[in-house]
Image (cartoon, rainbow, N blue to C red; front, side):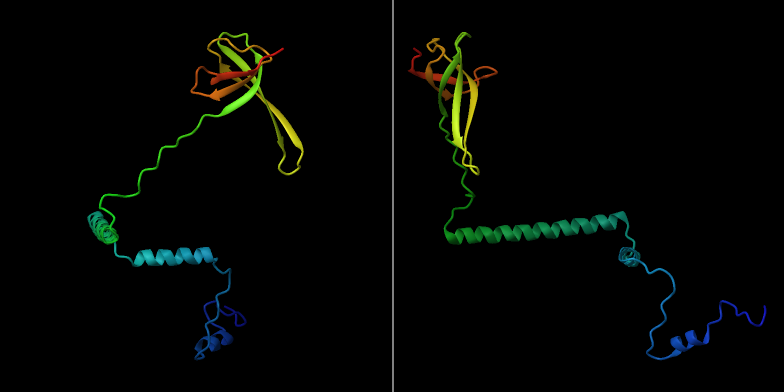
Length: 184
């Protein structure tokens, strides 16, 4: 080697002074710093390598012990709740009462018969006029529904009242209640 070249393994005077001085922080290594994600990965790897390796039987025994302790804790908690209910006067075995069955009244609609050509079936047009929530404008809409007319009583143009019913066919879910006004 030439005299003006120094080998890379030798430290320069500045670096040795910085590392030998008491209380001085060591110089940071040159190069890119690891990201937070890499540091977490290194820490996790170090923590997992410090754990003693266990056999599958040991892991199973630990799992069973943990489950047993949790089961005992649940049993204690249930006993406390049972004692609390007994102190309140609530009889044992009664939890939340069952929900009452929903009793719904069938919908009634009034409309005009558009067609009565099919046997025992009428098509009723329901006209609805509502005020728009935001714009306050009257919005008109119509819907047609098929209704069961057992006696073929209604004719085109009649005002009728229909009631909701069980499905009677693919399209019929309504029944004729009465004819309010006959067509002229």
